[in-house]
Every structure is written in C-alpha cells, then in structure tokens.
Image (cartoon, rainbow, N blue to C red):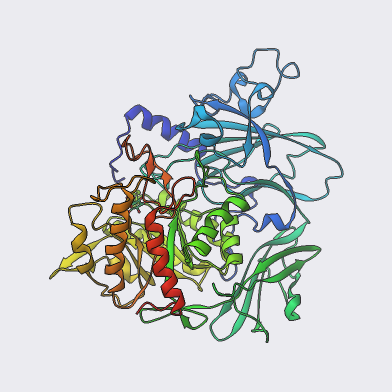
Length: 629
Ligand code: GCB
C-alpha cells in the first residue's frame, strides 16, 4: 500500500486499524441491501430516497451525548461497565457500577456538529456517543428504517442495545431496517460517531476545511408498507423522451404495477416491475412541459405509487449536453457565472448543519446579490436541503465527492469506499434538475494509479446517471511558450475540464502579470476555472496592497477577471469562495485565526469589496444574455 505523507505514529496506526476493522465498510444491516450493483438500468442498492416525503418521525432535537476520548465503548465494549451502546441505566441494569449513564449526560441539538454545539469540543476529533429515546405504540405493522442524512465520519448504530449497522463516509445518507429491533414502548437509539480519518479514509485527515464531527444531518424513523418505492430516477433524455426508473423494495417487488403521475400535465406513466423490482418506463415528452432552467426554475409535483405506497417529489426537467467547447442547457449554450461554497453556515461559530433557512441565506447571496447562476458545492456532497433549494431557486450545481488531494489510489478498499460514496450521492440527488456536473476529484496527483482509480469511479457514475456531465478540478498545468497548457490525462476521461489556479496569490507571480496569462485547453472540451482566489480579512484596508487586505483582494479579482475574459471559449468560473470558512491549517494569528479568508463575504456575511467586482461583471454578463465573448 502506498505511503501517504501523513505522520501517524505506529501505535496510533495500530489503534486506527483496530477501529477500522470494527467500524469497517458500510455493511448495511439485516442483509437488506447488499453492496452490489443490482438489477436494472441505473439502479443500485443504497438507502431509500426522499425520506421527508414519507411517513417518518423526525428525530431532530435533543440527544444525550457522551464523549469517549479513549474509544473504550468500542474497544472494550464487551465489558458491561463501558458498553455505552447497551444504554443501561441503573438500578434497572446490573448491580455492578457502570462507567456511563446517558440520563445524566448533557444534551446536544441534532442535527448538529459537536464542534459548534459544545465549546469544549471546538477541535475535538474522536468518538462521541449519542442517544435518543423513542416511544412507539402498537400495532407495529409497518417496516421501519432508521435513516441518517449523514454522520461524520463513521457511525455505529444500535437499537435497544443491538447493533443494526455501520457506515463510513461523512456526507452521504444511509439507512438500516430496524423493524425487528423496535418494540412497543421505550426504544433506545444509540449512535457512536467517530470523526477520525486515516490514510485510507475519504478524505484523509489532510484537508483545508474543518472536520465537523457528529450527526450533522437529520435522523428519521421512516415507515413504509411491505412493498414500497425505494428510489427512482426521472429525467429527459435525448430524443425527446421522458424516462423513469423506479426501484421497489420490500416483500414482493416483482410484477407490481407502478404509476408515475404529473397531475399538472395530465401525464401518467404506467408499467410493471420486473423480477428484480425495477420498472423502466418512458414516453414522449408531455406536450406543454415547461423546461427547468436557472431563469425559469420550473418544478412539477410528481407522484410515484406502488402497492399502497406513494411518494411525492418536485422535479424539474431539462437536458444537458456538450457541443464542442459549449455547455448546453435545453439546447442553449450557458456561461456559468459561479461561486464555490463549503457546507458551513453563516455565523461565528459556524456550523456544518444546514436547515432550509441557513441554506437559503447562502444561496440567495449567490443568486440574488452576486447574480450567479452556478454554485460549486465543494468538496463533498452537501446536505439535501441545498440541492433541493438550488432546484427551487434556479442555481446550477456542481456536486463533488471528497477525492481531495492525495488519497490512497492504490488501495482497493478506498476505491470501494469512493464508489459507494458516489453512489449514495448520485442516488440521493439524481432527480435534482439543478445538478449538471458530478465531480470525481479535486487537485489529485498525476499518477497512473490515480488515473486507473478515477476511470473506474467515472464509469460507475455514468452507469448510475448517463445524463450529467462528468468533471474534476485539475491543477496540473504545463507552461509552453508562456502559455499555460492544461496537461492532465484525466481530461480525456471527463466531459468538462476544470482548472484551479492561484496565480498572484501563491508563488511569486506579481499581480500585474496575471492579465497577460494565456491558457490552452488541448482537449477542446468545455473549460472552466473551478477555483481562483485571494485571502482578505474583512475591514482590513491597505492602499499599498498588502496581502490579506481587502484592497489586495479587489486588485486580485480585477487582474484575474481580466485574464479570464481573454480565454477563448471559456464556459464559466466558480471562484474560491463565497464565505470565509474554518480551516485548521490557517494558523496565522493576525490574518487568519483558523479561517481561510478567501471568502467574498466574512463569516457573518459582510460583503468584502471584491464581492462587488465579481458582482458587477456577472451583472454585465447577465444583461448581455449570459454570453462572455
Ligand atoms: C485549493 C483547494 C481548496 C483550498 C484552496 C486554498 O486549491 O482546492 O480546497 O481551500 O486551494 O485556499 O488554498
């Protein structure tokens, strides 16, 4: 296995390995969903989707929590005294003294990250146990899933003291069938969340963002009938067809009548599931269908039903294609006036957990104030509330998995983890019209191992969703005769070539030379600048253009936009970044204080001067019908 440049002591490694074995891969419980590619076009096994549209108990709210710095709950969990997951509270439990008691433990609002919710845990990286009690009434006729929007990074899940499953990966949903473990009356749900990453994890511990630990997205107890709609994918495909793949779960998945209806269009698709429980339906595009676009984000109420189960969604329909170096939405070229975003709320301290208000706050600054039509949701799948809102508000979206910098490209387990994470993301979000790109990597090293790894990841994505464009943020640039040439074989595997560049910020190149920089993209495919940016501390002004002054950032944006405007056939940009964000590697006490300051707005949302430089150009472009050249 390749050695990454992460200095872990041997004994730390040994502990990580033990934990790794215990917490291993997402072996979903009760053998309901095997981690295999299952039947049907574009349909794989993973958590059921769109849980907020189902009969579900929202478990948001206070959960008791216990910090376990030595991870004894996992390592010695067989001893009753420290078996936190058993959730025994004396005097009902053993007479022997217990080393924990959830009833006396503090509470934390879930969804939430512990770093922001408990000031003693600001930089805590490790294991925290959470408990929530759910009272249930009989009869319990339905199948029940315990569904997690996300837990960062590994989760061990117990119901009434019995383990129901594990999951690895901090940004994607997972669910366990807990029907058999639940009982009438009091039910204890205990989740151990371990935020530590290692060389084989995704990402590794080396990132330029804060590792927020905890149950960062909502938890639901979902009830479904014996046979139910598990996941579905509605889309327009070339040739003017509306296609729907619907996958059933439960007892009798074969030969079921499946109905997809769009009442507003008086449109019905009807079909029967095959023996694997998949119904593939299609018809000509209904007359009168208004296509979704950023200018007119038209969504339709859609209902899917089978055998007594019904799920509703709001879905937009549009096509995406490429013509030479142009990106076409509904057959029209689009220039992407973008901005990058981390999943971190406005405020100090910020949070990883987004509700609709916090998502709307950030997205409306992008859409309404900056006049953007595109957001790069970096560097991992963001909360579902973000992509649903992007659909509603009319923002095009770049969705990404955390293949960030150097990961273990030679490790088959890392590959399996990457593919599963991508699958969980795509299946959750492929009905979102806003998403136009699936991105597989950010600034990865140019090696054969990486290429072979990403080739497999890209192929998997294309099987799950043949309608989106594949991309990656590249940084391998060669200088030829003064021209910067995008020189990365990964460009051959993707549909849209995107480049990160920090000329004038990192390195010694002076700002005044930036406008003269020339770019060449030999692939001829659509070309984007996925990142550029400069740090500025809000309120620090210096006409002498000291770095970290707002004035420097303004000048940086002026010269960089001058460069951008000259790139022939450019399809768009997503500068780095909308808001300053927490990062452990930004330690400069004067300028940074653990914030990456490249935001165009401060942590609390104050606009820096450079915000208006970008806004003015975006507004000008918009008034010219979105065309750059
Ligand atoms: C990059 C990375 C991004 C960093 C940024 C920076 O190239 O993709 O994650 O935060 O540079 O600020 O240096």
